[in-house]
Length: 190
Image 1 (cartoon, one colour):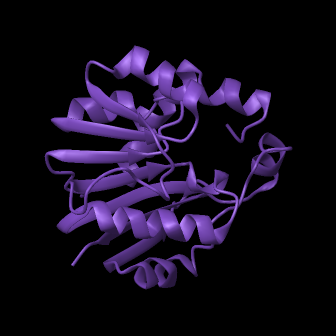
Image 2 (image 1 turned 45 degrees about the horizontal axis):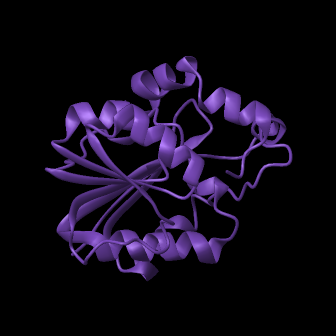
């Protein structure tokens, strides 16, 4: 997992899980229809997953780190399908999900090209009319300190709509959080 020890400790904490439940997901998913079948790319330690399994009948998670997959299977395997997979090479058929989401993980993808492949795969596995939604952190001094020796490659809010459009998405919105150093995005498969 491309995170330093302090970052892993934070992201696996109950405090982070509560922050996700109370603040990140409500803002990121405001007015988003998730449907019946949802894919979360990059669930990490499962803070989002524990909320999503309460909101959607069928949840699948694709996690790149094998050790984290085992942890997630132990915690959520009875309520979500958890697979060891790279979001840029998803092992699912075309049009398999009503929605695809990812939260505070894209900045851990090492290159823009790899992020773009994740966008393309999200589009491929979405059903027509399906939604790709999520959020991510933007850079700041505190962000850089937390990510010392981490992989971090933040998104440019101004350039993200063009990248999502290039992947094939329509009905794009990218917004900055009014008080936090974060962005949210929503896009649809036509």
